[in-house]
Amino acid sequence: MPVVFRRLMIVSALCGLALAGCGGGAPKFNGTDLTGASWGRDFSLQDPDGRTRTLADFRGKYVLLFFGYTHCPDVCPTELTRDAELKKKLGADGDRVQVIFVTVDPERDTAELMRSYTAAFDPKFLGLRGDEAATKRAASEFKVFYEKVPSGASYTVNHTAMTYVFDAKGRLRLGLQYTQSADQIAADLRALMKQES
Image (cartoon, rainbow, N blue to C red; front, top):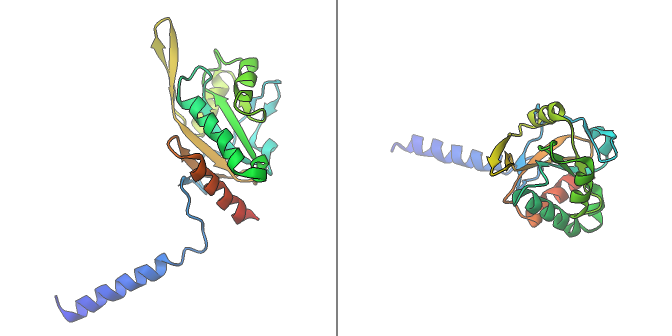
């Protein structure tokens, strides 16, 4: 390999390392960074008291938004249990977190069922629902897939298992995988909170 070419390769590698070290102080997240996404902007759904809620109602809070259903056998209760654990790990900062559970099964998930289901994990968790059209609009806005699957005399619902995180200004910031731990999510939320302090 010619000496000039080798020197160019070494200089290029060093420049690359120098640039990699200049991240502008941006935090590294365990979740997927969705900052600046053109989707996931808002929703309009009803709480158990029949009030229409949107993201603007939760400004000042770090919102964790998850789509699921109360008859879910595993993923949904696991997610909500993890979110309850996460709030405890954050200590006093846990009060700055609002968990919102949106049903993709409005046919069975009544307002009262949503209230009792979310309260079983944490009294401050909020369940939201809409009619079929509102559910489709919200799911589409957040790129959430769901479909009924016949099961005996009833059905289950296949759905996207992603939790969306909004910062205190109501901006979509992160996508969290089902497999991520409460510790990993707590670290991400602390990083977001520190960034905005």
